[in-house]
Image 1: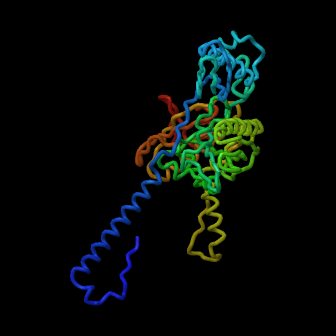
Image 2: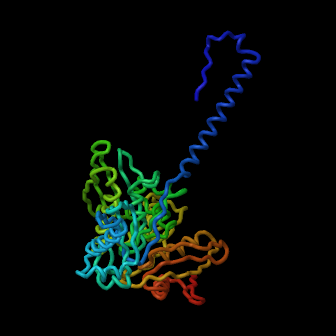
Image 3: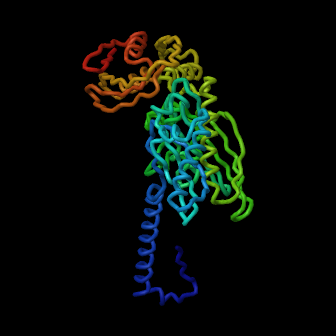
Length: 428
């Protein structure tokens, strides 16, 4: 809002009450601008932005089954439609040929996405949930065979949607985010950490975040979500015309370097078919991540989990190179040799949550303990749950192999480790 006073106004007219009126209008304008700026700041984190992910189920679920059947009555057509959905869902899972009665005995529930019941016809979009205890002996999970290998480390999921020339993640409730929120992650060996996108998460996890390279920044972000690395599935939508076909290009990316893993294209006939295309794309993207996991490409980036000692050594080497030679007043600081940790294969080892207590006389002790624990092979996440400067702090560690493997690795680094009360106590 701008106010302009014309120079053509006579000087006498600028005196008296008119000057007071101008000051009053100017003050009101400043107040309005301040209120508008505050409202814009609040609007960046408020509103309906995030979509809470569905609770993971141990059962096997197949969604998006469309049926169109007829019967003598609407009720009979509905029952026939449910049985047809069960058969199609079992076929999608790759189950063996079985009578419908045997398939029905393994179904725990039918999820109704949309249905229309007429006097003699039933049209619906259904989801079928199979009891894992009964169906698991025939199929290993949705879209996977039985005997899938161990799960991956916790991976932060940042779904990026590019539509209409705009890249977004949690700024609005988009179809790509909704598809990932409704995905049953329990059927996948990839351990997805799915943020809700509400509150300050929409400011931290943006489309530009996937392009960052700073390991310090990534370590801070991943620590807030107790994740070890990041995956960034990207969906780019191109609409041919309003209400017409929608072409989608889907790309699976991984890690702080935004590494390309694979890509494919799909087409939705109309806007109404877009949710179904998104659901199918999520399943295919998950397949790309599964293949990468089996090939050993989804291992946590060691540069993210590296302790602060490695950075201190790098800064010290840089300081030594930049320091003027022959300066006797400045005594060179010799960095302490870093402990040598042999890489250990922890693939397939059971994952365990371990409580670690450590003395923290100052902030540097907190960083040193976290760096040492995160540098242990097999550690998938470490975060402080109780911080007490000048006392004893507590961290929660997710490690493959259990507390014994963690304790032996810390002893190899020179830490004194003792156990008791279901927790480890470490000290220098």
